[in-house]
View 1 (cartoon, one colour):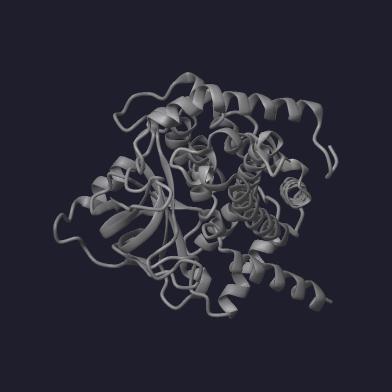
View 2 (cartoon, helix red, strand yellow):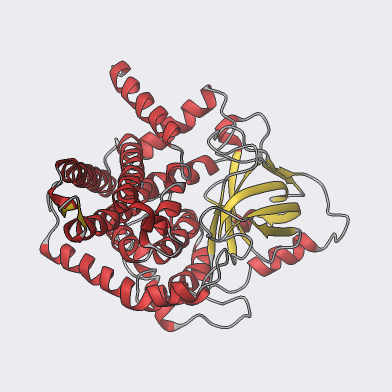
Length: 455
């Protein structure tokens, strides 16, 4: 393919995904409880083979999936994306044992994943991570670390009850992967190293977290602190958690841990949000973790976080494009049929020009998303800048398009249950999570000046 068009097979696949979302996923989404994980929906995504593609496809395919699902069922898109965001660090940086234990269940839709980065005092400020990994023994149960370590030494390929994972799921792990781990050298390794170095020089202490991990004997820590605004919390089966393991070490003092949801000392609560997604806060009260829980290397968690976000930022843009396209198509249908002022709305120049602007911005955003995803798949070192641009343009565009669609529909669009009422609530959050628009502008500017100053 070129940077400007999709192959016929890709277009046909997108159409198929939109049909599946409308016919099979939308009914399950409608039966879900607001603010709770919809396990039936996640399981259906697994049975359709879409969750497995999170780990065997490239960034462009991820974008095509997210845009197509978002067009017809934002809940299904969100469920898919959260499985990918939470489990990608395990796929790309986890040990063979971690991968064999969790990934078959994630792809089958029987285990819920979550990405635990943000904290009450560390949202856009990726330097304010406070979750601590601290030394000391849990007075409530000195045996807890040993029990946790023993649990983590369970035979790879077993579920939480000790049962063997399915042959099909195990076979899925042997599929050739396109996302490689730290030794695999995915696109932007140099960019990631540069970002870590820059964060250290600028005094940014970590990616988004206030959790600390303190040593508790050789290769053991206790996690103490809080995470907030975590999707799928507190119902997830496991979390990718970022905590500070080395005080005053800047971005190099953060470690990523794989923490099962039933680990002693881990509790949580749901949060009531504008759009009723499963989002919550997590409390870590001396939660035991060991070297077997580390994702990647100790004190190198910033790399895990940035590697994951560089992949998923363009696909957040794809989600936004899907919502924008749904709003645009609804507006085309409404303005073509709505009678007003002695004719149809589409015949009014002001309306026609507004619709043209909506279409223009949507297509421009789509092209930038595809370009960023293609750059990731091609191992382009310019991935951080392109990812930031794609997310920024697409999410800001979707906000504009959905708002304009509401304006052209009038009061009916604000009725509970209307497509645009739904999209109006859904479209706001993507401009904040995985790096707010202001953060993306900062990344873009930093990358531009770095290129200018390069010898």
